[in-house]
Image (cartoon, rainbow, N blue to C red; front, side, top):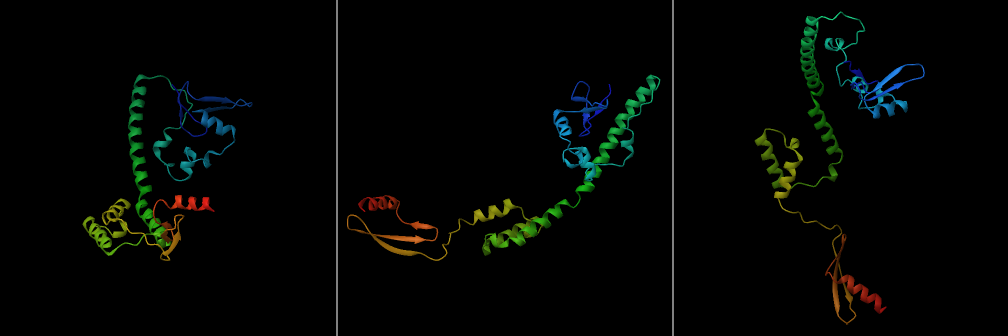
Length: 221
């Protein structure tokens, strides 16, 4: 049983699966699914699509030079059937698969080394640029965060968002301050009484029946 390779994404195309496209010049293209076939007909470049192996190899996300990859190359050389040769081949395929898996794991670890430090650097840069948008911490909250960081053996800036949010919730709700203060004024009601209204920047602070009173005044007018 021969397992073909998808022309577009390089995934395995098993027998009786996928799509086979034969061009007018008798060239055969094998696709593992309709997604690859449609992208091929739209004349898209596999190296520019992130879900193809061609893109991953060009971006350095997969091994490109390795001795185990050479054994997967197709060799159209007829060989006389030999039972011992078949047994050795199957045993070698299993061993090569193990070696390739181990090398891919090592390659991934080397490629991802330092990712955490890079992410922290980007996050710190973002916080430094938008520091004016962050809420100000109280002195007690700062001390609590420093204590937690000392217990974990890390810097206070490296604590995760969940820990900081928990400390802020434990400190209680913050009273929102209205910039510009407040304005008090009196309003005459329809029955001849007076009502005092306190206005803030965020809106009008008073009883819940103010909207009804406004509607009554409009009706009287």
